[in-house]
Length: 471
Image 1 (cartoon, one colour):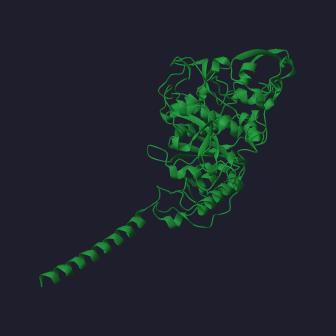
Image 2 (cartoon, helix red, strand yellow):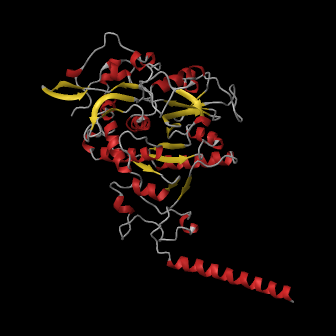
Image 3 (cartoon, rainbow, N blue to C red):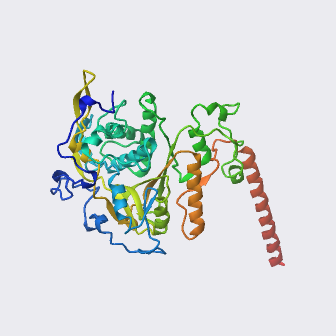
């Protein structure tokens, strides 16, 4: 199927709409009719109102509004005053996915809208779209400004097809229906809320399915690694990233990736060896997802500056999180950690439709790139909230084009930790993952013998003391 459009499908706008003049249509206005999106998951209050147009900023820590304070936007750094226009252009170019209504029914549940429960999945779509943008284009790429040019842009057409709300294994790989289907593997039924951790695995599974359709791609798709324990193990990432033509060179005679002999998981010395054996280079890029919980019930304020710092890294693709029971896709923050910027999916819009078009004289069905549809994927109204109001459950996202990018992340986080010793670590790294299936008999024997000798010594001391008292 032609995802890039053709001359036979070309449409012209009498009045081309500029990207920086986007306006939200009346039926998706933030002032919705009472009850239209009234759900326990999310409710509007005065703190939720958009503040990006008037960033009333209170500085914390060492930054100040007229000096070192900066706005970090997905690896870019902007002065809050002098670079305001550049920052706004960057924000408006981000892809925005929201609740949809009237999409094909999710059977057998008779669900045709995700309003009230699908915000985390929509936030995941926004992060995934940013990753695809980096992978196939670049960080500086912008969608064409006019609707007509966007409609004819091959990459925009491809993205709109991939994320359209239609169940499909050959076209709409990241559709809402496909995300819901993937969530069933993690005991999530349609209509249930997702957390950042679960949706990370949904992203991983859908990217793997998309990767199987190699005939459609002009570049090998990236792979996804989920560091589910808050620790990034280098050997796990390495095994994932050498699955291509060089896999055989990375395998030992026994057919497993080269690593030290099996050791007890408590034997830290075995896992923290400085020497890493030479392995082949990565054969594609990596999306690293790190689910974290930064606090028990509320967000731990000790993490605010560390989290804000991650947005300054060139590899950052944002954070999945939100306010309690209301997911967001966060794409930036002030350097002092006072404010975080995000896109809010809690707006209901009409689902995209299919249209019959003529391609090379034959009728075919493809996603209708109507003006309404093209306008619905960008917003001029991002959100700015205090980091302290975030839910403690988040997922960090990093796109690494090669292994050097991954190492840069580790070194940057470590350097920031060195410069800010009072701030806790967001996540940790290790060379090797514990092998809980290892033969631990010899190690356990040593531990037991060591414990036994300590007990004998303590008993002898107690006995001697008792004898002395009795005398």
